Every structure is written in structure tokens, then in C-alpha cells.
Image (tube, rainbow, N blue to C red; front, side, top):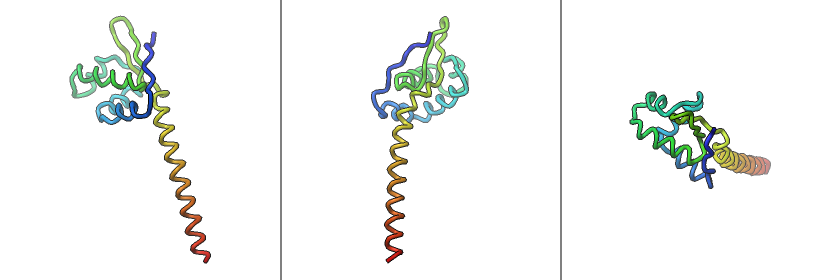
Length: 113
């Protein structure tokens, strides 16, 4: 059974988790499918303890899910965890699109005078 993760309280949790390049690489690797800690650790040039710690941070930020399979812990990407990032980026995109539209209108007004 998948173990629920703590919901990220704000985008800060997610961005802090994504700030580390190892965690971004781990997330990209897990996007290819569910993996056990040993498998993940064998794919990266960092210690098993470091991989476990990075996975725990990703889990706490809501970016990966974890389930127990016997004595193994299996991790996979939780796309819903990236919703805060998408919302933040979409807000920035709307702001800049609006700013560019206003600038174009202003320049058009100046060119018409």
C-alpha cells in the first residue's frame, strides 16, 4: 500500500526540494518508473545514505510517493506534487504576457502619434 506523503504547505517546500541537483536527477530517474532505494543508489555516484536522505526530502515535499513492498521501499514520481510549481509558473507567465501586451500597446500608441 502506498504511504501518503505530507502535503507541501507552499511552493517553498517544493522549490527547496528541487534546488538540489541530485534531487532533480533522482526525480528525473524516478519519472521512468517505480524504483527501490537500492536500484536508485546503484544508478548514482552518491552513497545509499545520501540517496535515502534525498528521497525522504522529495517525499516530504510531496514530489514522490513511497510504498512498502516487503522489506523494500519503492518510490515513484507523484505528478500532483508538481502542481504548486505549475501554478507558480502559470502565474508568472500570465504576468509577463500581460506586461508584454501593455508594452506593445504603449509602443503602438507612441508610433501612431
